[in-house]
Length: 335
Picture 1 (cartoon, rainbow, N blue to C red):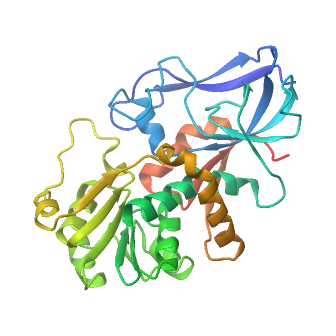
Picture 2 (tube, rainbow, N blue to C red; picture 1 turned 180 degrees about the vertical axis):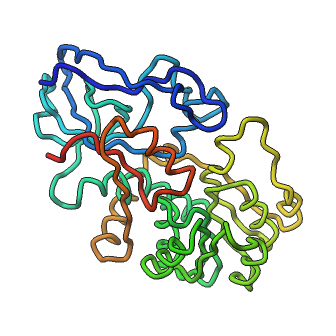
Picture 3 (cartoon, rainbow, N blue to C red; picture 1 turned 90 degrees about the vertical axis):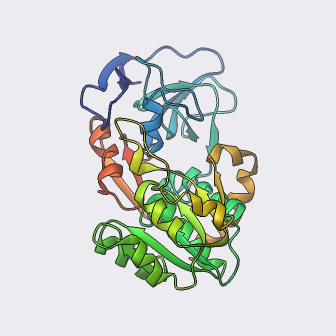
C-alpha cells in the first residue's frame, strides 16, 4: 500500500480565473481501513466546467467545496485493498472520490471490465453521456425535421448531443471555437454545419445555417451565444440549459440575455437541468447508449492529461478551448 496520498485542497475561493494559490497539492498519510471499507486507487479524474462552480460560494445545486477540503470530482478507481464484503481487489468503481490519488470508501458503483475502454465510463457511458441524453430528449424534445443548435459542439457533452439529434432525424448546427473543431464535428460526428463563434457574426451565421429558424437549443455557453440563439428561435422553441461556461470566471454580476423578450414573444420554454436529477433513470440511458455505441451510431472523443500535478493546468483547457471531447486526468495506470 502506498504510504502517501497526494491531494488537491481548496485553499481559497477563486475570483475570476482560477489562480495558482487557490488550491494546493499536499501529501497526506493514507488512513488504516476500518470495517466495511476499501482502499481505492484513482485511475481517472473527470474535469468539468462545474468544478469551477463547486469552488465558489455562489448558489449552486450542491454545497460548495469547503475551504481546506479535498477538491470534489468524479472518479473511476480500482480497489487495492478491502474490508468490504461486496468489493474485492481489482474491482472497478465509479464515484466522487475527488482530486486525490487514493481514497478510503464504503461504497460506489461497480463497473464491468473488458466490454468498453474504461474511459468510456467517464464519457459517453457515464454522466457526460447521460447529460446529453436526458437534456436533449427529455427537455429539448426534438422532432424529426426540426433544427437543433448545440453550443460547445466539440466538447464532451455537445458532441454527443449532436449525434443523438441526428439519430432523431434533425438538422444539427454546432458552434465551436476553431475551424478545426468545426470540421471535426461535421466530418466525424455528422453535424450538418458548424459555426466558428470566434471568427463569425454568430447571429448572422445562425440565420444562414438555420434558414427555418431554431427549434431546439442545447445551451452550454450562455452569454453572447445564447443571445444570438434567442434572436433566431422559432415559436414554441425549447432551450435545454446545461451550462453557462462563458460566465463562470466572471468577477462580478453577469447580465441576463439582452434578447430575453423573445422568450415571451416566441413562447420559448427554457429549462435548466442537472444530470443528478436523472440518476434514478441511469439504467435506461446506459441500455440505449450502449446499443448506439456498439452499433457505431454514437462516437466520442477523450482528451487525457496525465499526472495529478497537472490538474489545474488541465482544468483551464475547458475555459481556453484547449480540449476536444471529454477531458480526463489520468492519475495512475489502468488495471
